[in-house]
Length: 622
Image: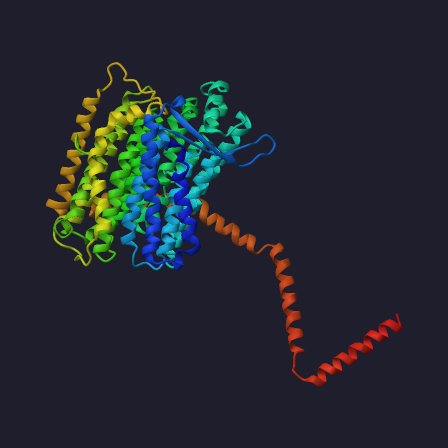
């Protein structure tokens, strides 16, 4: 069965092609069957492949499948080849299974949309591109999937393209991520010119053999790959595109945040972890970027009122935790948090979609309230996901994965108290904004009345993901052991360091502190929250954090406005004047010739006669 794992990305891609070609002529039932069914079949094949992978002996704990040679020129022979090891298998399992649940939800959520077939075509291409990225055995094929998810994010964020706001959000995501993609492409050029290959496993072996720890080339390549990861995973300083990406349909947000694009950067660093181990300064940069991002995004989430934007900043923050883990060499912990995050973040977005649908497109948590009894299934599953996100101790999956990162940010050789402190403060912020959102949405007086309730296709994914958001944490040790063959951890506990148990106790206390504070400010005495915002200092901080710490303003002044100014100068330069002159001369000729079209035959005959006489005269008297 393992030999058929090439079908995993092929089926979503094939269904995307069919839907693009004839999707508009299919009934909605057939379009949904093709779109959802192909992802479901891909998930089933992935489970069967996983069973074979665990039972069959493998050389080096991996399986390679070469399909064909892509390019063969001057000794450069990249292949369309797939590589399956414990890392890619775990990632693919999450992408296909969570992706299937999101597709099932979408079948009902998008049923009234005119672009139903087009939606599933884009979604399936999104999943196929992500699977190509995960399974590619060389960086060129990985980059193809990398650009594929970038394209699909543009198409899906701007899916409702008739609204200019959506179009701007899609363009912003596409342009900002291109900055990171350019850095990554330069990194690929550097790796190929210095090591002579883009085959990932060969590349890592040659890097270890030819480059010493701290080598300039190793540091340069690692930093360039980090640039690509920062763009795709919405980390500082390129995080500005992700909150605006909420313009797309809610299932797109769920797929984007839980199973595809934003986790691509985490996978890239994990897959090339050997290179980062050779570049300690670049690895430290990964940790610093993650720590700073999780804090800045956490403060921004505290001030948002749009439920989807709160979750967007939450994703930026949680990806920051994954970067923090990668930066301290806790490779397995980063992937473990990816798995649990996929469960609870997909559930939070799908729950938000139910709420928005039920309240006739209302997004503000301050105009919600009282939904606990109106939408009971959504409430309980959303509460489970929120507790997992905030880290309810010893029960939810998010506690086990996040606490592991916090602990290893201290105990690893690359860890330090500053990084541990950032992780703990980030946990407090997570608890604060999560329960602020829950109390404002589901408790208190009723805000907007419920006008619609979800059907089975939207409810079943909530229940399944709610179950996984709890039990996912109890596979911790088994998952870490499974990942060890692909990601040998460098973490060792220092003598005298804070023990894991003490770290868990502190994380639990932080969770309770955030829960109580949110209860006090957003349920028991809501006027306290208003008083904080009305305070001059509180208002200033609120506006600053609400505006993403002013990053958009800075980028607008430093990059956008100068570019527009330069474009205006370029538009009026002499080159344009030359071509404008040609155009105006052509217009004059056109007007002159059009004036000769009078419709009078005698004038046409006289003109022909005069022309004939003139031609004969030129011949006779030349």
